[in-house]
Length: 139
Length: 139
DNA sequence: ATGTATGCAAAACATTTGCACCTGG
DNA sequence: CCAGGTGCAAATGTTTTGCATACAT
Image (tube, rainbow over all chains, first blue to last red):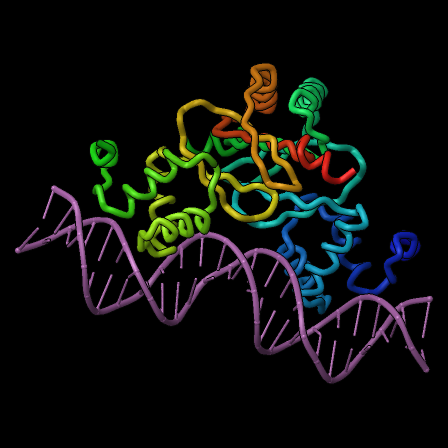
């Protein structure tokens, strides 16, 4: 039961929190904006306020349950944190997102932070491009 | 004369555009938000509207004169495009920004895009951490 | 002269917050 | 029952836009 999951994190297992967590877990698209979450819940007939969606996602972020990304369009996108760090490859035409992980890049990043005597807290790599599907459509 | 520079790009050499371009060229801080540019101009006694700053920076971006970044705080930061691609190392305490370039990372990025049959248009790598200065202050 | 750029104020967004009401434990 | 969570509406911060005026060529 997910309510246990939330309680472990010190979060009361309220309906909106459960619904949002379930949505993130069961949706085929791992990456969602607050608006996306809000609309998805409305469609299923769940009456959750947009402000609550933002509050809950922000709490989840604080609890380490989700990660917030800022891609190059200024809007926040949330994704369940399954513990496996990865970076992102994004299609600028259709918005599809592919996750990847490359140990060589990770190593170089650590080396660069060290060279500059930075205590690295986080890092993110976004590769933008046109996905194979969209290349077909626009020659 | 910079006015030639602007005209070559099809932009009328107006006062606000010249002032903003000069500011970007001569400021010791290469990375500036629209608000930063606006305030810097006010301080020098130049009466430029914030809306104009946004419009001019957006035109400059379209003309390839500046690059717009979205760091993890949702606000846009602009930097003169000198043609040398580089990535960024950012201090989460004091906001200072260091540029770097690593050919090994660039190579891996190209390889990854290729593996997924993406036609890469852009990419950005942000490393966040605490700079040496701020490490001293907060032990 | 004339088409374009500007400044201002208002609009448009994404996100946050204040507050009265509701709810989970 | 009661601390904490929620919904709504209003506030916020950033960026964009409409429109009358000013400017570069």
